[in-house]
Length: 239
Image (cartoon, rainbow, N blue to C red; front, side, top):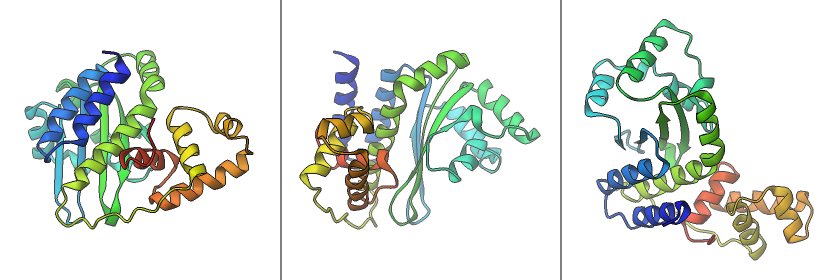
């Protein structure tokens, strides 16, 4: 089975997960698929309840909670301020507390490299999807270049599935995409650039931008990547 097919199989299993406990199995399979040390998903629902699943050791999770690292963790602090994926190397690790936390995390197998995708859902829901690994800067850069788009899409699909299990969630009211919006979202989801999509549809990039913004609005998405993820996870487009 090829890499793409294996990933799609895992996501199909995620789509049919019967409950929150099933997400743990999915995230373990995704970790093995990407051949990284860890994948972690952590959310806060509309009532302030927290849920997490991931591959960090129980010892590190307990230590993180006991030492109240949430207060000093630059990943969490930085992600609250951003909408786009956060590479850990670009965060502020200058404080003594941050450096001590980083050393402790690495000592417990978290890894020296990481990328966190902040996710903002309906009614104030906030989640983080994180991949971390122990490797050189050059190796990490290559990994992110290859997998950044897939990780973003998977992060949003993971969150959409988790939200299905939130008791207080109100059903989303879907607005149908126009045929041109479907075409644009489908081509973007396949990995084409905006210029390539515009050329394929024989329209200007300005007109394409109008279609994308209209689709984003209908999908209640924060940005284009989020719109593509929602269109895929809701079955509005097929790649």
